Length: 390
Length: 136
Image (cartoon, rainbow over all chains, first blue to last red; front, side, top):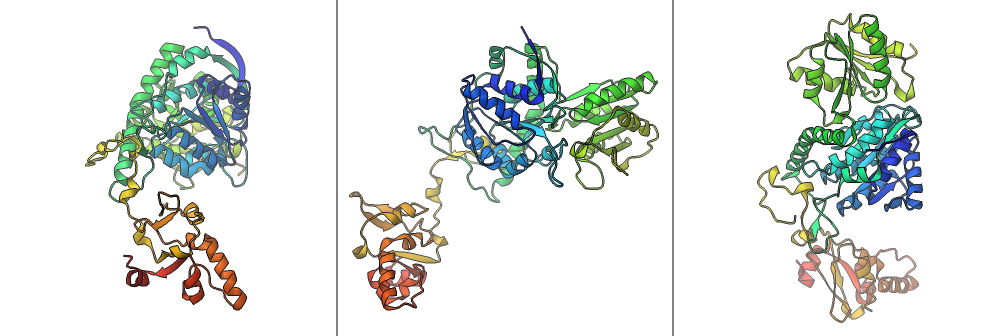
């Protein structure tokens, strides 16, 4: 297959993926740093490059509500947002996942207020981790492009049928220009195929009720059904990734194992920091320290078994969280990694690090220091901050 | 998709909890009322303003396009029909001319004898609706 090599920012890469996906409906509202995605996409609409019905709305709450209506009527639906925009979508995110509507959202990670800030951290998506959406974190523009295409297949799979968000780190990826391999439009179309919705609200020959009131008698059964769909997603995502690899030659999995097989010390993180951490791993290995990196690509569903398989032979683990849960115990990712290890009967020292909030830069040397701290780790320690002015 | 399953477990639910249409017909919301609207057809001009404003489609339309009775199975007794009725406005203006201190709204104006005689829609108590108008 002929690939086109272009220079694109993360936002441009996501907009290009959306152009190739060519959704039936997009409803969106601009917000930094995700604005460009829909800005570029709306020019594709204006230029007739896509057949998408673009709905401009007055808020993110309205954007996701319009998406919900569109998806309930059987249309392939996408949107994009960031930070406060995602937070404003909060209540409707839960409804879209409960209605099992496979909306795909291009998310750009940005700190939630306050204080008000426009730069990268993961507090926005971590705030929606329990919303029933599939969450996929991209490390770079290539992943953002590839994973957004994959997300359509994953979300629309009949045994999953859940909304999915693919996120990039605000400014670091969204506005950083990188080398991007793009696939031909028709090959992307062939890969995603036609959307076969479970139901269609506008089918007058078969009228239905969507979103009915469910009280004490069946609410918990609805959640149990969603739980099953998420479990299915954990099985189906690797299948779709492997089909993607066969088609486009790019290999993805729920997690990325970077030199963990013989590692004494393993660092776990999400998103663009994995790129920086890979440099740290290389430098440490030259110094004779067996360092490894586990990048969690899919955070919802949480790939506990896959994570344990990669990290459980290490001497100590550090988990880097770009979001505060303010529990004072550990960051959100660290908490789940610890739980996964506990469930597997593997009790290892796990250190929880909070870093990069509000776009605070993270450097190779800081990550190397974390690995060095690990060599002294005897037990799990409470959460530590790095890169903070003490 | 719209099968009406006998739901025993979570596995029996349709994807997304979708169910058949028209289920609100089985869910009678009329018993939510704290007051009952009474339509006085002799004063009605069939402008259909009440029908347009009714949030529950609880005002029936007759085959000739004129206003019909309330559907008391679904009327929640919100009083919007009485409030929006142009006859209400007309009668209230008339009362205010002779009694500048008249401050009642459509919700409780049925206490006033002139209003009671001339209005097209009265909001009455459940007790009165039952005893005088035979509405359960």
